[in-house]
Length: 267
Length: 299
Image (cartoon, rainbow over the protein chains, first blue to last red):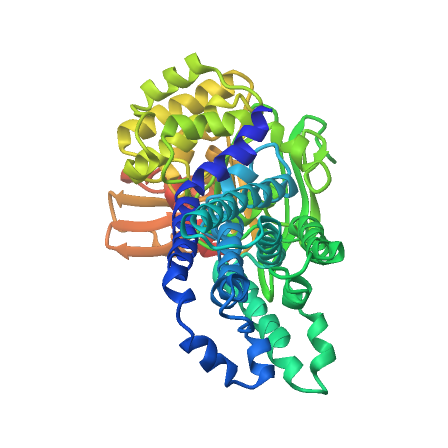
């Protein structure tokens, strides 16, 4: 128990500030966006402008039904911004606690103690997951609260499903960050690879459907797994959650194995 | 023949970083209760060897055992009996010294608050201050405190007094002696030769990843060149002196001779006995000269 205090408690304490700022940033974005709904819902200009766009472009960027609460949330928040910011938050937390701490030499004393390198790294990714969950909880609470205040009529079930899918998508790429950190503990490389992969797979999910040749390949993208079923409008099939969880677990297991197979970076 | 009393055994340690050979077939044994000084210039392989010992690096070849435990397969058990002070010390900035000591203590499974406070007092360390507010020397003291507090059987100290003032270096040497008296074995890597001279029973000198000399401080001194100055009552017997292979860099100026002496002094005394010597001055080399000599001869 005492060892868990150090292995989990120390990284959690070290992430306090980051969690606060990420929570304020994301929850603030949600509050500000939803706060504009009352002013937006009475205007038809933007919806009419979107209707002029090709159907493929509208679908690709999640702009369909932009005048409805679900369409408004999808187009402004959950089609791209919130998931990508969660990717960035998860990758930054994981990188900071693993590659960042190792490359600047602050893990040296910890790893010289009677504890395995795998236990140290695994506890750090678990701590980062805990910190990530706090950020997601802040987004969820603010979303539900601001919906009630401004009268955004949307089912809590579909909203929660969308937030959970966004979080799972974000954590999938955070797990990729973990895997990279266990192989090459360079914070810049870890974050840029995770976020870069997230953006690339977003492009696959969004742009590939516009081409008849490429369209089938969109199903390779985790963004398609997460949002291909339009979770703000339709009940989400269980396999979509599993499809996001499975590679996260696989990345974590491979990273857990790999981290003991290399040298600890010298400060 | 392996020493059954060896706390630490390193057999044929090789460590490559890509094409760079940091350690090349290093063998070392450290016996119970010894204080072994690990000397060498930058890049000699000292820190690489110590990091292999702690399991932080994976050797390219070779085997390291600590108390009979192979660090490659029983690293956790081996580290339970070791404490380490890194040369390049980086500590978490936002925690207090006390929190850091407690955190590392929890990983070891025990912490003696009375002993912690006594060590902090001797090291003149305020554990209530955050690490980011501490000077380099005070950060070093935090690491030293955790090492001496651990009660580990083998202390691995890499440049332990770097940043410490002379008073604290003295306290450090006292702590080393006390730990040794309590049964600990100490591996001390240092650039401060006087510190090694005062603390170590035995010295191992590394160069370019290999051991170039090992022995007691006295033995190493004996291998170093001694500076000679001789004044003869008459003209110096230059031809006889120049025939002595033990003499180096001889300068004969009338009745005055300066030279260096390596090896036994007996042949020189034989020559001197046949002449009238007014004054003979033999300066005993310190470890630094021995060290420089070793590096010169191994170059």
